[in-house]
Amino acid sequence: MADNDGNRGYLLDNQQSEAGVRFGALSELFDPVTFRHVDRLGIGAGMRCWEVGAGGGSVPLGLAERVGPAGSVIATDIDVSWTRDIADGVIEVLSHDVVADPPPPGSFDLVHARLVLVHVPDRAEALRHMVQALRPGGWLLLEDADPMLLPLACPDESGPEQRLANRLRTGFRTLMAGRGADLAYGRTLPRVLREAGLADVQADAYFPITSPACAVLEDATVRQVRHHLVAQGLATDEEIDRHLADVAAGRLDPATAPMISAWGRRP
Image (cartoon, rainbow, N blue to C red; front, side):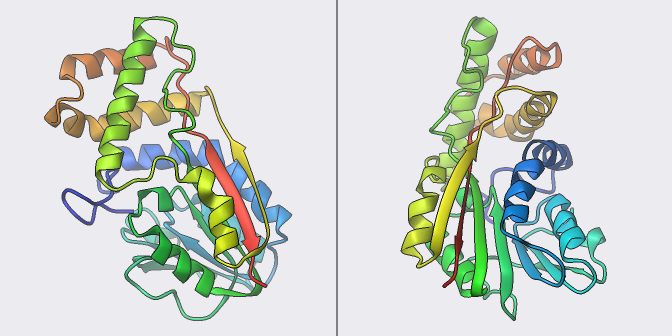
């Protein structure tokens, strides 16, 4: 997603060079979880899928492998900079705002959004559009973060390096909340899907505490929001440089916010 409003839009602008690094780390961390759910839901040959907020493109590509040449995948985002090159006979890439624009035409066997709605102020309208796009029996799979379930970058706050990391994570959460993000949205997904009229609703959560991809994601995210942290007095350049050096030296066990996956079927 792109920053579509200078003060209220998406904080992690896709136009920044760090965006590609973040997409790679998110793919490494979360694609196995996403596709475990996709496969459990029976998404396969000949089916039609809509990927909302396609980001770096790894999920549309994985969906295309599953639906094959007889199926189709619509990959949408406000900013399609990182996905336009994956378009082929199965994948169609569209510039699209899930809140402001109507759903792509036709109905879908699967509608999926990962780490999207937490950033969208009008989540109810986005959800309405996604449910509207499902065929009878089609599945909606929503996966979103819940930063308030784990507000710390380093759950094991064992020293000054970890305390600094946690203070910077607090600053990042402050920036997100200022852009309209709901930092406790992930936990609401099962209820939200039931209230939308979906059946067979289930959910689980994934919480990576540390891995090389966690460190890559932490480095890229801090670099991407650095100027905002400094401009709003949430951190100094010296503190950010020290934190990035700690990450690079492997002195931290950086965690990500838990990602909650919830799915339900249109009756």
